[in-house]
Every structure is written in structure tokens, then in C-alpha cells.
Amino acid sequence: MERPAYLLEFEKPLRELEKQLEALHQQSLENNIDMSTELAAIEAKIETTKREIYSNLTPWQRVQVARHPKRPYALDYVGALCTDFQELHGDRQFNDDRALIGGTAFFEGRAVMIIAQQKGRDTKENIIRNFGMPQPEGYRKALRLMKLAEKFSLPVITFIDTPGAYPGVESEARHVSEAIAVNLREMTLLRVPSIAVIVGEGGSGGALGIGVTDRVLIFENAYYSVISPEGCAAILWKDRIHAPKAAAALKLNAGSLQELGVVDEVIPEPLGGAHNDPAQATAALKYALQKHLNDLVGLETEKLLDLRYERYRALGEYRETAAK
Image 1 (cartoon, rainbow, N blue to C red):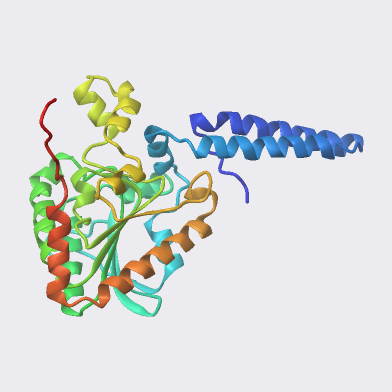
Image 2 (image 1 turned 90 degrees about the vertical axis):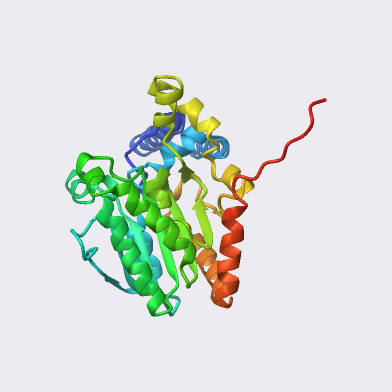
């Protein structure tokens, strides 16, 4: 597979080795010299360096991977996992928000309702998708589709990938905070199973607006946070340059989120991130979705609601110990 052209800062040592390998291979061809030993040595060094880099990523580096422009987006996963996806448009009040899409589909033969935040691949598409930042009508559309799913007893699967809800004047004028708050309330009462998957960025209330579900899954290099690292750094240290420090303090890495009970499962990614092998990432997501969906669909509705209530009541628990 051709490696992505987009280069993250911490990947530069790896790219330098790959350039050396390519130059050595070219030299071998041009001069008809057997350099298999030298090539094998560099390939081994590349593999070792790759594992060293990607096995020890800091929270800030994982945020960078989560934002990688070649990373699979929600519709990529929907297209690979589902059949007969039928997009449904509009909130029946104002407009159709293209940053948040939804509709019915079949997952492993089971009818489901898909709700997803979608980014664009280039400038033109990003403008159409508003850079993955939904406005109030997006959250109201999501709620309309959730209620439709409830009416027809369809499990709801949401895909979270947003830096946050759109903070513009128009969005505030149409009450984006109220739209998100209503979704939080209504999702706790939804009488069908629900699963959220954080595939990239999970920023603030913009992510939470479709994230109050029975199970929350997160990809290994995705993040889920009350605020972006840059925003946190600007508030606490008055300078966005401290974003790496903020990322560490916020415990953005998926493993910490699982330990804290914020997410239920971390989905493993291929070495280097989901963009390096989308098929492998999709297969891991498929396995996780099947497992959790099978657990949830067999529950009685009242039991489902009780477990959801207990899950969210447990968040934020802490223990006090007497000072020694």
C-alpha cells in the first residue's frame, strides 16, 4: 500500500529511513549490484523504529493521528460495514445539516439506524460538511432519526468525529446548546439499544450530543474530551503552544478513558493508525459492534434503561481518604 503523503512531526525519523531504503534499492538496480543484505538491514531497522514510535505515542501525538486527513471517516466505515444505507435528510424545522448524516441500513442482516458526524476530504467538501462541526439542525435531525428508530425498534449506531459543535453566531442564534441538551436528555430515555463509536475526534458537547449511548467504543488513536487540547491550553496557560501538556492532563488517550469508565472498549488500530490499513481497522470495528449489539438486543427494555442509568450515574465517582 502506498504510504500517505501527509507527514506528522514524530514520523520524520521513519520517513528518513524509508528514503534511505528507496535510494539504496535504486542504486542496486542502476548498478546491478546485489545489496540484499544492506536492504534487509534497513528494512529491519524500519520495522523496529515503526514499533518504537507507534507503541509509545503521547496523548498529544494520538490527537494528531486522530486528526490525520487520510484517516477513515464515518461514511467510509458505513460503506464498508453496512448495506442498503438510505440517507434521510432534514430536521423538519430549519435545514439539512451536511456535517451530521443519518439513515437506515443493514448491519450483518439486522436493520439499524445510522447517525454520523462526517468531515470532508478536501476544501470544497469540508465547506459542505462544515469541517465536521454540526449546527443545531444537525442535532435536531439526529434526534428525529433516533425517535424514528425507537418507533420501528431499530438499534442506533452513532459515529463520532468532530472537533465540536459549530460555535458561530448563526448556530448560537438557533440555540445549539439547547439542541445538544435535549439530545442528552432524550438519549438517556431512548427505548432501543444504542452504541457510539468514536472514530477520530470526540470534541466537547458536539460529540456528546450523539454520544449518550448504552455502549461507547473508541478507536485506539481517537480521543474524547470536554475540550480540545488547544482550547484547554489557551484557558489554563494562555497559549495554545502548551497543547501537548494539556493533552496529557486531560488523559485523552483511549486507555485512560477506559480505565475511568468513560468508554467501554478500545478498538485496536493497525500499526501507525487506521489510515495505514483501513480494512484491518474496519474488521476490528465490525467484531466489536457485533459483540456489543448482540449483548444489547437481547435485553428487556426496562433492563436496558436501568443499565444505561447506572452507567452514567457511575461517571465521575471519586473516593476521599483521610490525610495521614
